[in-house]
Length: 142
Image 1 (cartoon, rainbow, N blue to C red):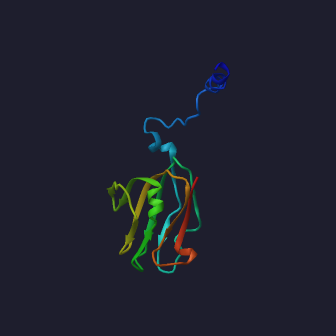
Image 2: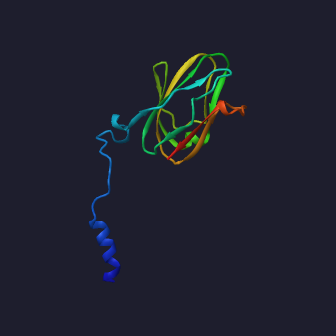
Image 3: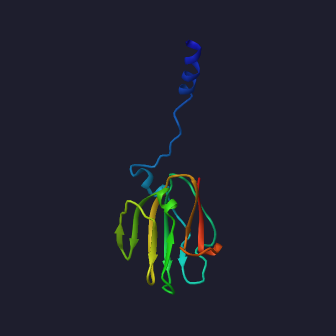
């Protein structure tokens, strides 16, 4: 019995688990925030400059802008379920949703989404009904 308990005791004595000092705000603290490159919704234009790689547990802010050239949406239910959305800001109005499947712009506008990446995996945000590589953004959460 003693030999079975010894490895556990040694593992526990090795020291505390490493934790980030995020302060009182925890994951929402300023030191844990990153701005992502903006996404663009415009007829015939690429959505993103390239794929995005996120770290689980990090707070991100991303701006999505539409030029109003066409009614366009971004769908990505799997991605939106892999993150925790803190807020969506549109024209100074803050929305705190429980979840999303997609966002759509009927005219020119900008929205900012603040979220924490949670579930590791590969996800896609894409303009519904399109198949072109430039009409989507690939997102990896590590």
